[in-house]
Image 1 (cartoon, helix red, strand yellow):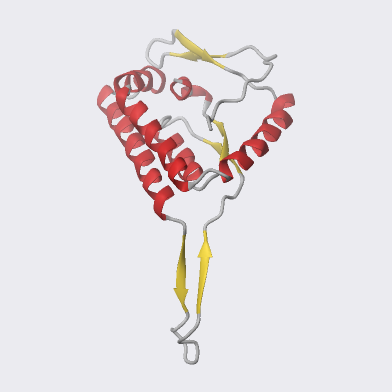
Image 2 (cartoon, rainbow, N blue to C red):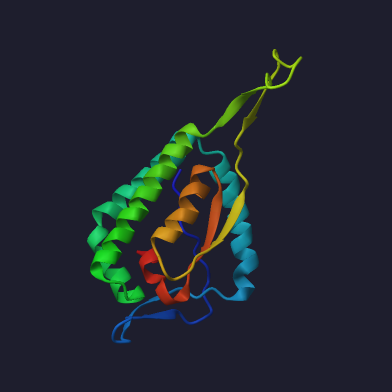
Length: 182
């Protein structure tokens, strides 16, 4: 199964992304208009069904591959963060490392966090009883991220959502969102 971005018929002009230091245009990102929200939600619900059917090891693999790809291109991501968010290169490099770590931790949780058996022996006459719970996907997650940590905060939204078998519609902050499309 290959996960992909939804392609919409865009009617709005793209959002220009500006360099935080000199104000020059350094790129653009898709601008989805309000009339396209129903289409996004329908695609998200379809994606939620596909994501819920992914085995935990597949979810972990997706997250591990994302971490590998970001780590491989760490210098590109760091440079984008510098240009867009105005962080120092050292701060941006740390953010990229935190993002990679967040995705790796999410992959580990995808493998092991399936549920638990709960012993009910804390009260008299329940010593021989037990219960269990399993973690099930919620479905469609809509995530909105701020500008201050444009890559790592996205990883904090996407990592656990994917680990849990959920589909995600991500609305990044306009001031610093080009690196997310990278």
